[in-house]
Structures are given as C-alpha cells and as structure tokens.
Length: 188
Image (cartoon, rainbow, N blue to C red):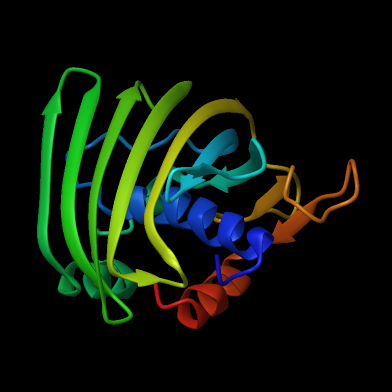
C-alpha cells in the first residue's frame, strides 16, 4: 500500500463512523444522546488492519442526523447520485453511490439494533479509482451506550484507543473542528 498503515486505519475507521450515519434518513431512529463506546474492525483491500479500534463518542441525538437541514448534510446529498434506504424492524440497509474527491464511492451499510442502547453496523465501500491506495474498505462496528457525555464534551467529540503507533493505554482525542479539517484534507 502506498500510504502509512496508521493513516489508512484512521481514514477507513473515520469513514465508517461518519459516512454511514450521514446517510441516514429522517425517519431512522437516531442514537440516544450521551457517550457511546464504538468498537470497529476494518479491512482494506482484503487485508485486516490492526485493531480492533475502540472509541468513545459524545452524541447529541438532536444533531445525530447529519442529513437534516445542515449545510454538511446537504453537501453530502449533493455528492450522491444514489442514497437508498430500506428499513424493516430493527434493520436498516443503505445503498449509496457518492463522489468523494473525484472518486466514486459505492457503499452498502447494514445497521441492526435499537440505537437506544446498542447497534451493529457493517459497511463495505468500493472506490473507483482507488482512494489513497484503497480500492475496497469493509468494517464492522458495534456501538454501546455507556452513559452521559463527560464534562466539557460536545456532540462529535471522540477519544480513540487501539490505533497503530500509539503507546499502550494512549488515546487520540478529536473534537468536531478537527474532524472537519480532516474531512477537508482527505476529501470526504
């Protein structure tokens, strides 16, 4: 691969966390407000990335639907020629075709669970042409509500552990402003 493994893990992991929820429609239940523990495992072009990666993310349910009327949600929809969602009971299937920095990203996301206490999300995305050396990413993510957000945290605040290159017990913290800068840099 042309890109450092830790960068690939970060890009693939963040894409899984932030692109799939961005595809949710207004009638889909949003995650309960509070602190969620999210564990993810990712493969890039069939090769398992180091992990699993664990993060804690502060969610404000009123802001969880990024496609509502926010500028970011509207921008995401403009980039997608297809955004189909089918819901049956506690299962949501999202098929999408979007343009990401001159790459066509074709994705399928399957979300199960109640989104109040837990969920499981499986996502596969193909990039044409490959993006940052990645042709296909696949991830499995489980989320569990663990309580209220910590003091000072706001919607979108993330603390990650288990990333390559970090010392044991080390954490990587990211706030929503940092996320926006990364999204711009990596062509979300």
